[in-house]
View 1 (tube, rainbow, N blue to C red):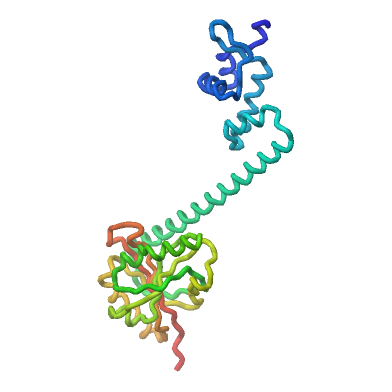
View 2 (tube, rainbow, N blue to C red):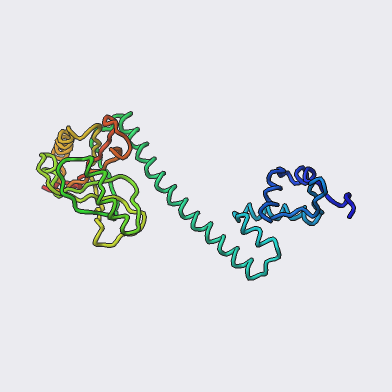
Length: 277
């Protein structure tokens, strides 16, 4: 055969913008075989083989692996092509779902960091009223002993959501049936609650009721949390509101995010109603 009808490995590399190393690897795995090997070991490719390279590149662009491409470029029937393309599409959809899930978790955590930063920088420690919607959380009863680290980074709680083939996101929260007992150091049990990525069975859920809530942020560790409770109670009394007995502690930034306790931000939420005389 006339050498002029062939392209050297260097010419192929230049024309197709591919390295010689890659071409040699393609030959090694049987993906693109030179059409001629001279006595001196030089590789040559004819035009038909050369034109296979853009096809390989396009398959790679779609996410096919080299061993998969090898089967597809060697004259696969429609049935094989349809099967492989459908499988690759489903694979990308699964990866897309996984990526979306991870973005959701990161976004939720970032929002908490931004919220805590704003609270600390602006020193937002006054009581405000918030109208909050009903929400459903994953929940687990917990014997509370004022060991916040153990309660918040809660191994049984995390195992429980894992066993439900689900994932937690957003801040850890604790629900106490008596705000008075919690503030006084007498609380002995609570519900640890957190938003779940997927719907949870009713037996493992807690419904946060919609309503108007008195909200106050506490900055720093939990040793002086009772002082923030006092401030909240005084506000409720002086602003002519009646408060529900229970309380919802929402841990915006805590042990999950940092060991610097001066950066901790906790929100206390108590549902209130305008006092009727």
